[in-house]
Length: 144
Image (cartoon, rainbow, N blue to C red; front, side, top):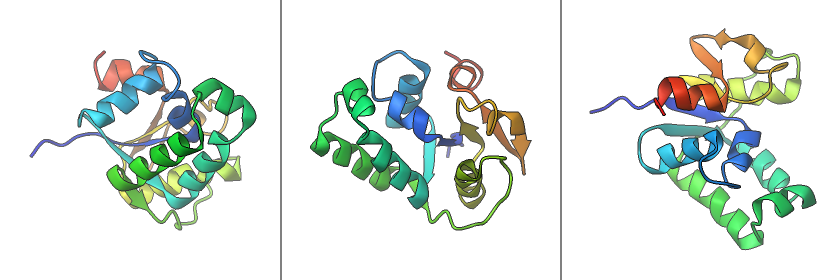
């Protein structure tokens, strides 16, 4: 049985991946749909995603209506590895970003994918979980 990378995408990556094709976030979501990687998320991350998808500027960017937003969340819940996200960690200087590390620990993820240089990427690695940008993940892990 192949061992696919297990990743925890930040909400900004999950949103950006829905906007245009051939961007690193969209390539990551396509790799997930194609079975090349596994995505892990948590209830707190899904709650954030649901909230962010409804921001007027995000609706304008993604062009997703309420039904499409709900379908996207439902697909993630059904097809991703969903963990409770209840492990308390104090890794990031931004308490809101600790949920990514909590999810990664609970799911035993290999990577956290984010653009947040200050609060996520600056950690580098935590308990064997690497932080990486979408572009570097596509280049270094997916080999595209």
